[in-house]
Image 1 (cartoon, helix red, strand yellow):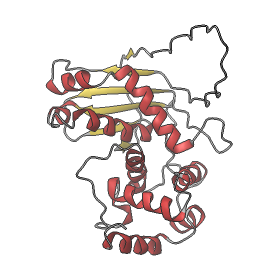
Image 2 (cartoon, helix red, strand yellow):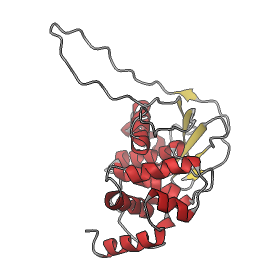
Image 3 (cartoon, one colour):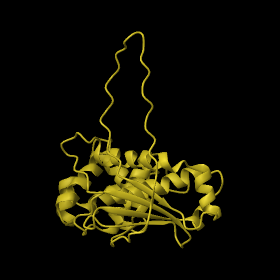
Image 4 (cartoon, rainbow, N blue to C red):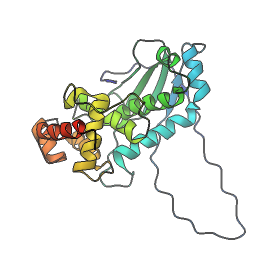
Length: 260
């Protein structure tokens, strides 16, 4: 969930970012393929006002957060932008990401706007974490973090994009990262803009049936929303090649047929 409002400025504790160990010299030179260019990870920080809360304990016991956050950010950026060297890659000015683990209702939300120094805050409920089944806790934490990190790096049509599409793109990335929870299923209830996994599955279908099947449709949407205010007809025609109503009806037939 994303809430477009300026973040506060709390004192934060920087997270250490693990650097790869230096390679050992070999007696015999070997030829290896050059590593693909990597995205730059912004400064990260963590705040836990209630360190002894069971939810905080569960997260820290199941996740090495100093390495998990950079990994998840790379996942998000790779799905939204492919590579930092691609000519279509225009990263938003996200200068920092702070993760707050605190008691609250709901699951998680992200605040901060590109106009306020590019600072982002993810607030994650330790109450929610404490209620996750032990067998699911690691993957659910990863899935929620990936979803919220999308909000730190996606575009929103200059603050005009429907929230359902914003949330759907975030859950589309979660789907692509193979972090969908077992209760998710395709559904046409609520329309294409219902958001979250309902819109996420629709975007997955669009990419597989109207695009390259490799995320190209959603990347095109994200790039379009970087430059333009959302206009429904123009957006869907230019990004997918059709009207969203007709595309949704076609998707509905796919869902009614069992998703085959």
